[in-house]
Image (tube, rainbow, N blue to C red; front, side, top):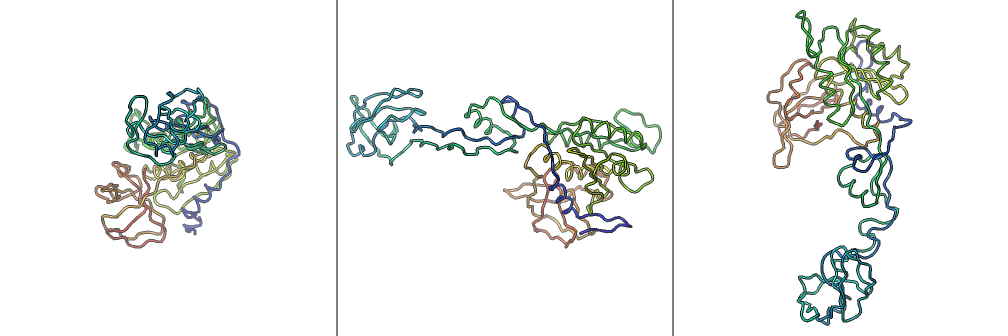
Length: 408
């Protein structure tokens, strides 16, 4: 589905997502890190079990290794002690038991462990006070995993559990994807960077480059801050070309609409030798967006309004970032209950800032304190904010309706 605005066709949001998902990455950068350095990184290879674990039947608690049927004798002779880490080849014969500890190999001839709490010790024997089922507290061969089982898939973000499993496999180093780097710059002759002195009332303070840097870092990206630059074709072209040398994604804000000084879109299309994936998406905010690919690198031109650039960065730049680092991840979308009526408006897919509250295990949204107006109102992102998604075809929403909300 597309929306015609003048002579320009805007693709649907669904189509834009489909295009980004279908993009091929020829080669992702991989590096080898020590096990603990890999924490928080994205795994680049499947982790496969090299053997069964445990390799032998093992005790799961402190107790006595016995033959299951011997419980009918009620009293068994203690014939030895089997500490954890011992491999003395002890044998459990009928009528006897061996004291065994958590993590010890089960002695030959035994098939069941009876806990210390279930017996009374008397003169070198145990008196069984409570019987147990066959195989009780015995960890079978391969209980945790079996040989050749894929334990952790490539594309997994490495957390504490992954560290523990890999340590159990004696992996001191692991291959991970390099964290992609995003270069961010704001364009506009009217904008000032932090600390710059305002010399006329038409100048405004740039927030985009810093807001997007913070959002990128929140999701683990390396970010190169390129600052602000004026609406000058040569300067913008030089910045993008320079940034492409050392960054995986180059993001600019401003200069993508239809004004006389909106140079970014023309530079991307005509000067960089990149393939334009799409230009213009039928969404609100941020319909004037352009994304191009040059090899395994991307150039993204976002709108200049603060709310627009923040939302479109989340919708388009973050998915590219996840894809580049081999991460199978999307922004989380949850079902939430609407706390106020919402009238249908417009024919674009809209992403509207809403207050998100978790009450008794259910998400609720409202719009208290959210201001109506242009796509410049960044304060609407303050607080526990989500983005309510409404498709191109809208119907009025009533109190109690379930809606889709992106969690940022």
